[in-house]
Image (cartoon, rainbow, N blue to C red; front, side):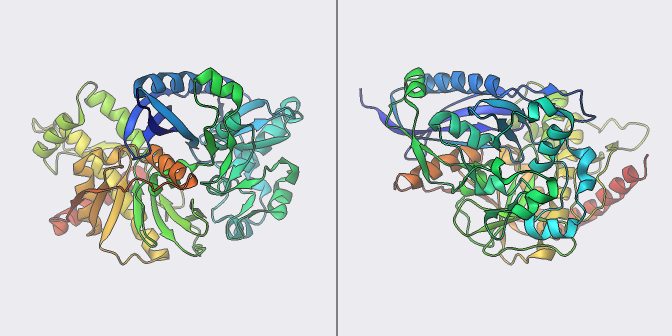
Amino acid sequence: MEHKEAFLVVDIGTGNVRAAVVSTGGELLGLARENVQYVKDDDYPDSIYFDPQALWKQINQLVKTVLAKAGAVEILAITATSQREGIVAVDAAGQPLIGMSNHDNRGREWESMIADKDRMYTLTGRYPTALFSALKLVGLRERKSQLWNRVVSFTSISDWVQFQFSGVMGYEHSQASETLLYDVNAKAWSEELCDVFNLPPSLLPPLKSAGTVLGNILSYVAKRLAIAPQAVVVVGGADTQLAIHSLQPDTDDVVVVSGTTTPIIQVVDAYVIDDQQRTWTGRYVDESSFMLEANAGVTGLNYQRLKEIFYPNEPYEVIEKELDEASYSQCVASLGSLVADEDTPLTKGGFIFNAPVSHQLTRGGFVFAILWDIACSIFENYNVLCGVSPHEKDYIWACGGGVQSRKLRQFIANLTNKKVRIRDTYRQSSVLGGAFICAGALGLKPADPQLLEEVEPQNRALFLELYAEWKRARNTFREIR
């Protein structure tokens, strides 16, 4: 039987871990997923962690499952991508000690140790908070000294997975951008930043570029997973960057990545910082580009949780049909999305509708309001982004699971007055971006992603009126304490 040449991509998101097999021609041959298991850490007010060994066992089982699904394949290369800001700490023997996710806030109590936040923003391209890796390490040091004394290094989750496959430790540049220890413009670790947190530079692994080969798969791992020992392990990158890479964007293109959160990104060719410190700038996965970012927060997670309430068993086609039948004025939602130029996030949210409850109010009306809240939040952040770096093109790219909703794509087009484009890679964008990275590392021509659909703006005046109504609803929730 002839074997298809293929790549293995491991993707660790905030909610789930996936293993996928993609042919060298870009065809998704198989995918398997499970939820990531987190544990609450009672030593901190707001902290969760994961067991890296348990995650690695999950990955091994998922790889075996997806290889069985994919059929007769020869794996040429393996890569990984993962949630940004998540890290794994390791000991002197390379054994993992603890995994800290992007939504682990164990460092929040020590944010005040950053005396010069303006200087921090200038170097790192982001306003410093406990979201980022350095403060997770500080929290570990300050409250778990016995564990901290065993830590000799740390790396991103995707780089740690690649270490498990290859035995070579590193830290990819787009992931390093999220640590507060990396000078984004200089493309290098910073001793000055290490000094801010009193962290020794010896903790920092060598920096690695996405699309470079770490080495061959470890022989015992290859044997356990039934992968040919000549398969190479390739440096991947952060999940947002790889999702964008699957679109093959041009410089100055804007991309909406609709996942657990919704980053709104512009790919730029120079380091850009915002005088008002509302945006982030990080490294992209090529040698010289940057990502300028505003983020609408946990929009996708809100949608998924409420979809499970209103449409627990129905496919997206049913939702879209009922959305088409929903009235524009049934209700308005504000569910805690982020707006880059607001000083504080919303802590209260909900739906506003006329009382008594109208017979016209349906579950489709509630989901309509959810998607409209997401679209308005994207529009607000898009405007902030354009205020920092103008966007002259007449289109916006979109990818990620959230834009399976054509209604959401239409909303974004109507508000921004830009065409919204998706490619045929949009549903599994981070996985397919990983496959493109592997192809480039092996000198193969990557798959050519095709334009799947382009949504034209419609009825903008009406939707700007609805946007003003959404703003009023958001202000109502802001006043609730």
